[in-house]
Amino acid sequence: MAANKSQGSFYTLFLVAATVLCAGIYLSPGALGVLLIIVGGVGFVGSLFGMLKIKALEGKSALKPSSGAMKLIGAGVVLLGWVVTLFGMHLTPSVGGRLVLALIGIAVSLFGIIVVLPGAFNKNAVWKS
Image (cartoon, rainbow, N blue to C red; front, side, top):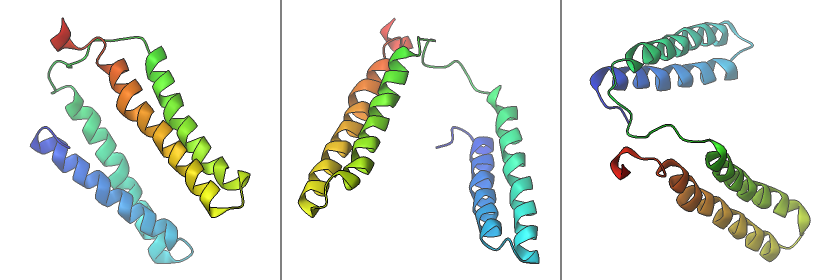
């Protein structure tokens, strides 16, 4: 996940702060919940600012800038798979029909993730020039 120690530290802080924030939201009516929300929020924001600070320390990106149209199409295909899965539950009352529509939705999402999105991101990759 992280390329260096500072990225790993801020990512760990982000995960811990997000967990504390969620616990605070769960316990929000009480004083402990409010304290956890404050601590989690401060840690969350601090980790985000820390990640922004170390962004400049990274090297050259492996990908050249490319048009976003193919990336949007890939994201749309992934979302279409979720739509088929979610609305398939309302289209048929039978378990078999729901299973088939869920599998079709998962297949469409995987097609978007495995075929369309990598093609969009690898189109202008540095190693291809």
